[in-house]
Image (cartoon, rainbow, N blue to C red):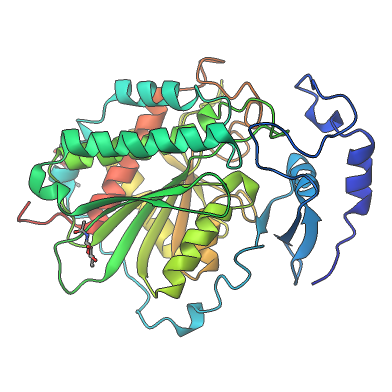
Length: 396
Ligand SMILES: *[C@@H]1O[C@H](CO)[C@@H](O)[C@H](O)[C@H]1NC(C)=O
Ligand SMILES: *[C@@H]1O[C@H](CO)[C@@H](O)[C@H](O)[C@H]1NC(C)=O
């Protein structure tokens, strides 16, 4: 591994450490303490970071990572997952194919039950934590709330028999906040595949110690897929092939949670048939057409086409092709592990919410551009993805 010449970038930023955060008043002055109460983040801790176009990862401190991110540089923090993807070449399962959608009637019945009020209540609660930063006490509290909420919804909405096929688990990490994984076992005995629907539960401010309600990024995706899950189990749906819902920790730290989970699946040779990421699903920029952004770079082309077909069939708004670059959300971790993954976002990438994310103003009540109706379109897509790729067991 090499040290990259990030020194110019880093030393400029260190000279005026908070100049990058000009939409915030820093209470901290010019001298950075190395530790903050309520946070388990040491700014001088070394990390191994994979940047686009670099053959080898480079060593950066946590502070340098924060500064790089604030400048729009995206990366994998590979400190704990340097070998992610190393087993992909040995995988024996055939490349999955995606047969045309065939559950029109049953999918539509579920779509009719998706509830805007649930999305609104969920966002209000999820944004009430000061920050959901993955190395903070409140980021652990928000994760615990999410875990308990999923458990309550499952008890309330899933028929008793279905509950026996559902597992709800924390996936612990070396930092405070766990990822959360819900699995609905399939009824088929000869299909070992799994379909994954994901979002990231953590939030961050450009300066991580400041408030980060993270309403759009990614409270919106987290709650869109949670409402999809609720509606599916309330309909008594059990798939033929296993379907999982994932809420990743630490996306904002360099896709840390999803890499750890993907590495675990890779090492157990899990047959991931399809993974779909939902990151930012609420914002409809003023003066733009409401649409679904389908990311076409660093995603699987066949599954991306399938995702578009589902939008055409089941949503009330059209899709638009767009790109978001290297390591831009958790689908990238699954891709790195050699699994087919896609990413769907609130609009074309240029029209997405660049104004408020990673600030204290990423709130649901900051602007009428934040739309719960728009979030529901993504809940619809998640329902369709789960049913069309997981199937619907005739016995349920
Ligand atoms: C799907 O079902 C709806 C009614 O539930 C119907 O109006 C529509 O034509 C169907 N679409 C297809 C492609 O079968
Ligand atoms: C789901 O299936 C796996 C094996 O495929 C099994 O180990 C697990 O116990 C099952 N979970 C539930 C909740 O039935």
